Each structure stands twice: as structure tokens, then as C-alpha cells.
Image (cartoon, rainbow over all chains, first blue to last red; front, side, top):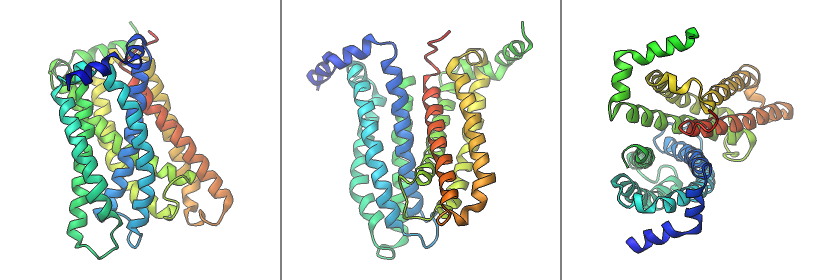
Length: 157
Length: 166
């Protein structure tokens, strides 16, 4: 993996980020804003799955609407996250918190795109309610773990 | 020395604020809890705003979404505020002249006033939201203002460590 990290480090974009006083902090700020919108869309879907949404309200329609917000916010998270990574690639590859965040993120993304999506659009009553609730709880825990490990990189990375 | 600075210096000198500031875990853990609560709080506020401006969740009635989100917004607002106040107490002299911190406070007040005005004026007529176009226009305005104010609050908060204008 080292040649990949070195390639990231040597990108013109990474150099521009290192040379600028403002670019990196502003990207960090936009990243956390995008994360906030993303987490909001996750939580609203998870709440419905946990059974805390309005009674009689279609969970499927909420899930589909939240999906669009998730995709747009996810794109913004990625666009603002990548330059932060390439600029610090050589430092981050040695950061156990960054590596943990990436593994957590991979697991959470796969879980969200497969199990969570299927369960969130399943017709009401097709799955036992405990399954839906468990998936909502796991999703919420995983995304909060990704967010928290990301925040801690600043301190212990 | 102005009395407010004296008060902050006294606060900073207290045993427990000093202990938290000097501990390798105190400040980072409070700050991380602050961020974890805020992303849920502001995230849900933004979801409500997206519904108000008509960008998402348009197939669910506004009043119902608001009724269910509101308790969770409050449940995360309380620990967000508590951890925020704690963070200020740990290092008051570092924050009180920081441009981004002051901007954050102003933005928070404006966001609070917007939410209050919305609740007192518009929200009372929530049952008419879907039929009365004037109420919808007011709700849209409140949603757009809230989106802008909370986005600016989050951005200025993240910029606090970079005190560019000393």
C-alpha cells in the first residue's frame, strides 16, 4: 500500500492543500457539515426502523426519500474527505484511528447498502419487528462509531 | 482588567477546569461527545428544514414529521449545550476573543430566534400547512433560514481552532 500513499502525497492537489492556510480548515468544516446532513438522513431512517416514527406513516416512503439525501450528502462527504486524506496520506497510514475508521466505514457502507436498504424498503409486516428494530439499532451504532472515530483522529491519530 | 476577563481567568484557574484542560482525555472526550450530539441534533434539524423547503420527505405530512422529530431534537440539544458550556469553561480565555467562536454565538442566537418565531407563529397553524399557500411560504422561509444558519454555525464551529483574525 505504501506506493499508493506516496502517490497520494505527491499529487498536485495535496501540495496545494499543504501550501494554503485556508484550504484544509475550510474543507474540514465542509466535511463535518456534510457528515451532519448524512447522519441526519441515517438517523431519520433508523428511527423509523426502531419504531419511533409516526404511527401509520409509510416507512418505505421515508426510506426512499432519505436515500436521496444520503446519496447527495455521501457524495459531499467523499469530495471533502478525499483531499484531507491525500494531503496527510503518509501520516494517516500510520494512524490506528484512521485505519479503524476506514475498516468501520467499509463494513458500515456494505451493511447500509445491503441489509439496511433491503429491510428499510421491505413491506410492513413482512419481517418480524425485532429484525427491523435490530437493523435500525446496528445502523445507528455503526454510523455513530464512524463519526466518533473520525473526530478522534484529530486528537489521537 | 475588565471584569469579564477576570471572571474567565478565575474560571480557568479552578481546580476542575485545570484538571480537564491538562488531562489527555478530558478535553478530547468532552469535545467528541459534543460533536456526536450535535451531528444528531443538527442533522435532524436539517432534515426538518429540507422538508420545510420541500427538498425531501415531501410525501410525509409536515406536522407528523415535526411532532416525531422534535423530542429527539430536544433530547440531543440538551447534552450538546451542556458539553458546549463545559468546553468553554475549560478554556475560556482561549475562546472569548476568537472570531469564529463569537460568530458561532451570534449564529446560534439567530437560529434560536428563527426557531422560536417559527414555533410561535407558523407552527400553531401547522394543520393548515398543506392547504394554505401563505403559511407554506412562511414555513419555507423559516426552513431556508434555518438551513443557512445551522450550516454557518457548524462551519464556524469547526474553524474555531484556526484563529485567523487575531
